[in-house]
Length: 486
Image 1 (cartoon, rainbow, N blue to C red):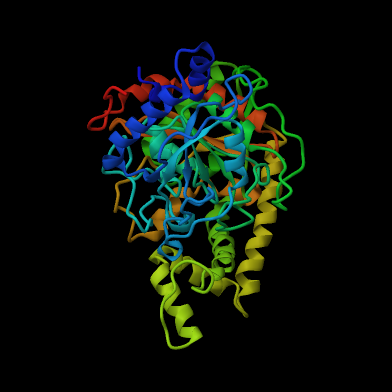
Image 2: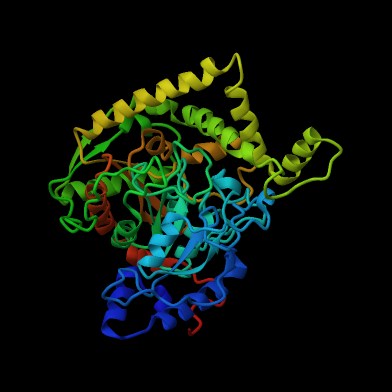
């Protein structure tokens, strides 16, 4: 098996034993990425070569491990475009905190990945540079907005990647691509150097092939950062502590009332089958009632667009990015933003500006904020009765590219089960759980208690074990040229 197919944990063991070097791992991943790129277009660009790895396998936890980074996370001197024309050629003079931490841990950046423009989308079709394809079926979306990161991991180009999650943008593409995606508790990972979409919702997290790998990477990302005023000073538990305890003794909450409508049949059947397996292995299943979650999508698209309208006001053609020539200042603003922003971003800015405007603020934004408060109380109460809440990551498997471009409601409903974790600030993780008859990945999501990622990861590992997806992953048809020696 090529080095590029190994997990983070397996690569760590190989490095410690001297079976390979960081340069050999990097070369294997780069060859795999080069082979996959013409077919899935996951990367915006690659690094020129491997940087000198920090430390050694004993002192740097991720020594010699290549990774990919979503292009809304700052890497000093590299483009930070968010796949938007308005930030064309912008290069930040600083690293994001997560970039610094991964470099200090010995990880090596392989390249930056494609995304929906400013992270606004569920299919990576809103990118100014074109869509990414799903490695399981090139006619289908990899999900979004971190579709490039999820596709890169699923195609074995890198053992892990960074994504950002504002309403499901780590978990939903992880689900579409048959990989693991972790959204930590809001404020658990620094957002310094992340280009803001909706500041009260955004969170950075890892996309990996296994739950244990997610824990390993999360351990290096998490922790207080004084440069991010929302970053929590609470100590970080060891995410690997107790991760192998299995399902016995776990109590899992199932919001059955939320799952009666809109679920694909195979998604529903997979949920029931996995829950039955968990119960046979000793997990306790209880029903939890989350009636406020019915309003999650409406609430999310009021609050997120309002914050997007405020955050994106800074892109005016004056300080950086695209600047149109015009006869006066107002016309320059208008022309620069019209030229720079794509259709979806423009729609969300307009909606956000509307709900914040005089006469509508109380009717929409204030009401949505109140619903959010009620939603958090409801979820915290439910989690006081169980260790995690389990539900599908998305109501359907990966859909075809172009299928929902002209149907924004159906596109937005792709995130119907994921936005709640962002609105309430709790951690959540997507775990691959099976395959459809057509061979597409299925995925289940676990939502956990705030700041208790270690318990969430234990539950996710138990789910991963009963699903046995590692064996199913071999069912993915290789991409043209995949498997060439490297």
